[in-house]
Length: 319
Image 1 (spheres, rainbow, N blue to C red):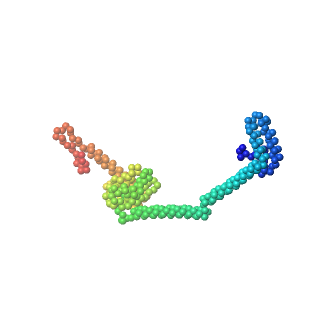
Image 2 (cartoon, rainbow, N blue to C red; image 1 turned 30 degrees about the vertical axis):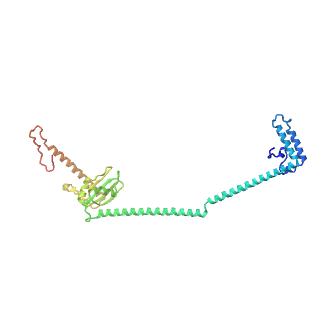
Image 3 (cartoon, rainbow, N blue to C red; image 1 turned 180 degrees about the horizontal axis):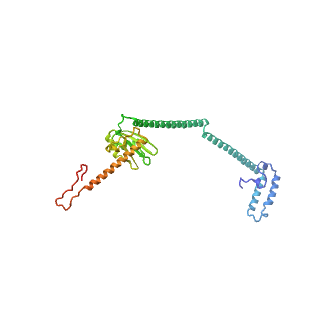
């Protein structure tokens, strides 16, 4: 029979210390009651009835024998002690595991002082970055204000200078704000193709931009005023500040030279007058060219000597 079988339980008796205190009469009485219950005649349909009844008799024989019962009680005592030790071991093991987990958590947990120090360093670093940003913003504002003041100073010096500035070397440039805008560097690059540029002063409004371009020579002014057109999306209107073309027209058509004030209605009317005269001069040149072409006599193709056409004497025209 298996040593793991509890013979007291087989007879329906309590095991352990209580089973060891039972008398032989109590064991015999329990056996008789259990034998009536498990007898094979009482359970003809149970295939395990004979085996169960045989196990019952074996357990009774062991408990009835004094020496065998003593050994069995000792075996049960050893088993109970093993279970108790295992339970205590499990408790200790669980406690050790719990302590180990707590130590690991404490090691991973940040130190309050270290955490406070890191937070202080983070805030200090952020404050330094904010101070640097504010200083850079004010520096940019000061630089922008300085550039604006320098531009205003140059503009005032150009506008208010009398004999110190040769107006025949100055170009008045204007453009609309509908297309590509122009900067002083871009205007300097455009006009540098026609001569040295001494200075560029920008004056812009919301709808219209304008500038004064000071060239190094009068020839550069004449060349640039007839050839600079700017970007195709936003053409430039280029006029000399003191126009030499206007002198070619009769005195009756000339208008008084505007004052040295470069802004206001006076200069705008002067600018429009110059544009009208330029357009009129261009139309007059076209009419003259057409008239000369009509007076030309083409050669007679039937002539054997190939006589040439008579061309009216005009020093400004060639056939």
